[in-house]
Image (tube, rainbow over all chains, first blue to last red; front, side):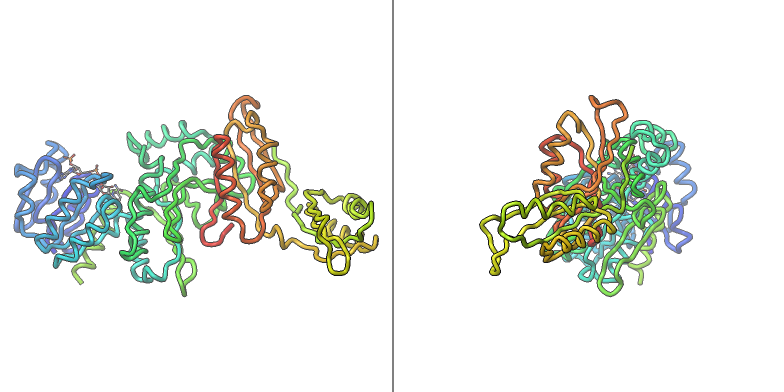
Length: 316
Length: 177
Ligand SMILES: NC(=O)c1ccc[n+]([C@@H]2O[C@H](COP(=O)([O-])OP(=O)(O)OC[C@H]3O[C@@H](n4cnc5c(N)ncnc54)[C@H](OP(=O)(O)O)[C@@H]3O)[C@@H](O)[C@H]2O)c1
């Protein structure tokens, strides 16, 4: 497939780097200020080096990518709330041209799911977004395979940063501020980890799951989620939990048409208490009971691999 | 810092008493004698069974061994035990509350939980690192009526909200209390 990759951050760059391995060609690539277009495929190494050195991917205007020859638009620009721009307009333009879209960006399917589906219905193109929930973990594809109508609940840990902070607090008996600073030093938490620790990122993923489960009956956005973060937790609360064989994790629960995110008491070594930056999700479905998926969720290459898996599915 | 009596459970006893003065007190004696901890008594004076007895519901806490002795003691004392068991409070759940627990009157918080009548507190473990003036946390073990977990949690949210306490709920989705 010929890919047009929007966003040259951790995810977009990794997609460009790994595309060839998966048998795809990147014909267009843009960041916020520049673009490079080549119908024969861009030189991934050279372009990524240029981005590193000069901060741009090429000399062309970002707009140029939409005139390029491509089959699938890969959207990896920043996730934004509300209107989900610029991601949403990128999706709109690709679908208007009857191209397929693969999202890493959560915004369009968390904040404007119905709009995206309506545009898709008018288009020859298809939208896939497996990478938006749990990065490399096959969470949405498992729901798709089981059948959304057969799934009664999805719950677990979907943010590696929050999970890292809570597992360190539990293991070391340290307070939140201390562990967060350490996580930032280690590069586990970003400079501004607000959305990770206040539950917003987890909630966006829960909302996407809720949208998939409702199969168009009800649209969910962040406003429909009940969200609480982990900023107020203290080391002594984790101690109290541990004395009882439990621990506290930032859990999203999607069930009965509701999305709730907040710190929850869970069994200390249970299915939804993964270690470090891992994610862990339980899917409850007819016939299969409780399905568990645990592993390394986010990260540039991890998320890029999920994007390329979606591209693969479009090719089939 | 924690007070663990893990094997203590909450039980409900349904008794039928003869309508005579002193009967209620007499029925409580075997509970005390065998080390049961009385949680509540529900005594409907106006209500009489077809056979002329007064139904009384008694919630107690005891270890399973002691509970057996209590039931035996009641029967020995000639008191009608209609139902004895854990049916009423069959669901256990743990919550953590944090904030100005002491300042906002811990015992009032307990009374409020008990007042929901759907749950009873079976264990409390308090952690107050910087003394009682500062923020402290407590783990509560609750025994809830079967099927009422959601109701109990809703009541807990209200209490936490009103007292400006942080509540950490147990994961209950998928029927796991
Ligand atoms: N990182 C993960 O593990 C992960 C996992 C799942 C999903 N996601 C999602 O994937 C997306 C990308 O994540 P990331 O970590 O790669 O983010 P990032 O490192 O912040 O990169 C974002 C990129 O988008 C570019 N961009 C911004 N506005 C643009 C525009 N109008 N047109 C074209 N490009 C534009 C930026 O350009 P400049 O370089 O010029 O600033 C930057 O290269 C986000 O929506 C994120 O939520 C990430």
